[in-house]
Image (cartoon, rainbow, N blue to C red):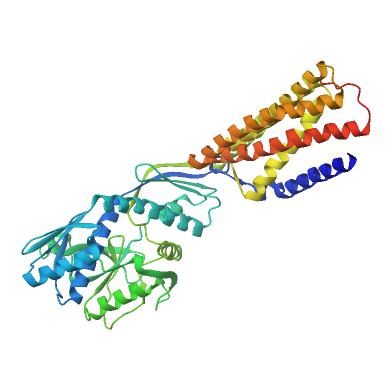
Length: 517
């Protein structure tokens, strides 16, 4: 018996030591959530129609490339809507080649209506829905990558309904920079310039054809590249052959005049397309387009394969941010802010003070109630309760959990649940003593009979906590984490630790009666 008691005691001490090591220092081990340390809360709307247009342009370009390999070098085509495109000027020979290319590469995603001189391709509804969903998922992943590169601790980035993304960033001290970093679509494209520059859009529109598009370019001061003096307009190819999706990496660097620039390199597939694009357009300007604006339009003097630079009057920070955005991947669609809130650190400190005050008052009331109702036996429950709280914060520290204001509520609820388990045991013990059993027998029977009730109540609440964690947002997840860990600790302390404390006291002396009642 004493040997068994020793091993149980050593196990409790080991759990206590591990928990203390995990919890201390609290300010280093446990992160504070948005509502406690301040930060940003945003709801973003992903405009998935941009992704549909990009997919339409990409598949049109692929069809043109495939029939070019079959001997049709200049197949005329254009996007008709977000989910359809057409090719025109077909002959019996080119119609067959277009039909063959469609059957090989596009049939699963597109429906085709091919006539004698014209072919119209419409995106299938299933593929359209899939493209929209992939755009939201990719946007979430891209934002996640950007935020992680920025260094925000424990960000919350989740998909929501109606193509929306929830973003919570605790501890952000430069909201404007983070806002720009997130929102910047950074959709990089390389387009061949066909005409320009023009002083205004109306002059460019006079020469616009269906396969061309008008894009603006900022004219910068030669002495200070950060100063914009005018805007010019160019006619460029509408089809996007090489885009940011073909990037391998990007990094900030310095240009010939020591100005900040961004260097980039392409993956093997992108390098092949880039080489074909530049090799077949020698002597023409190549527009480097970022988010629908031309950053620069250098002349193609030789075939370029896998690398290049982007210039545009960058500062040190903007060059670094653009490289981060390009490296983490371009957003597949533009986004807008539906909701934005900034929580100040002073409000967070008030929340922490209020939460601590509520926890202390709640714990004090529980301690007083246990001592009044169960007298000295209540010390057993209080000891188990203190160990419960230490285990809770210890394992939150090991997991790197984020403590939120609802999380503090979870701690307070855990205190109540832990004491509730002891109350179940104590009332069972009291019933056994009133039935005439000895102290040791009453304790054993009390724990045995209360065990199933404790497990039932805790398991059902654990399942609820799991659902809250799975489907809840940041603060709700914080509540679920503290509740889940606290409940597991409660089972251990109420059943194992409390029982050991009774056994330890009975091994030291003979107890004729418990103060339990």
